[in-house]
Image (tube, rainbow, N blue to C red; front, side, top):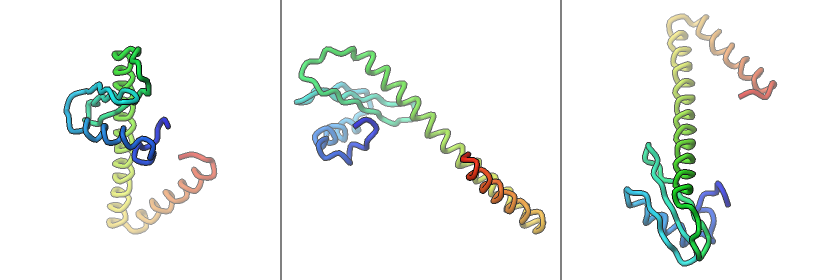
Length: 128
C-alpha cells in the first residue's frame, strides 16, 4: 500500500481516523493503536507525513523511523517546490510571449509557432 492515498484504502479506516486526529497537533507524534503504531513527523513547510507499522510488539528504532520520515518529508517538499517553480517558469514564458505578441504581432506569432513546434519535436523524442 506504499504511496497510496489512505482515503482510498477502506481497510485503513481506523488509521485514517487516527491520522486525522493527529493532524490537529503541531508536534510529532508516536501513537499506539490496537494493531500497531502510527508515527507522524512534520516537515519544514508544514506537511505532515505518517508511517504505520503493523505489529503488537514495538521493537523498532524510533529515531531511525523519524529520520526516514524527515528525509521523506524533505524529498516531498523539494518535489512540490520544484513543481511550483516549473509552473511559474512556464507562466513567465507564456507572459513574455504574450507581451511580445502585443507589441509586434509578427514576432509574437513566431514565438508561439516555434513553441508549438518545439513541443511537437519534444513529444516525438519522448522528452518532457
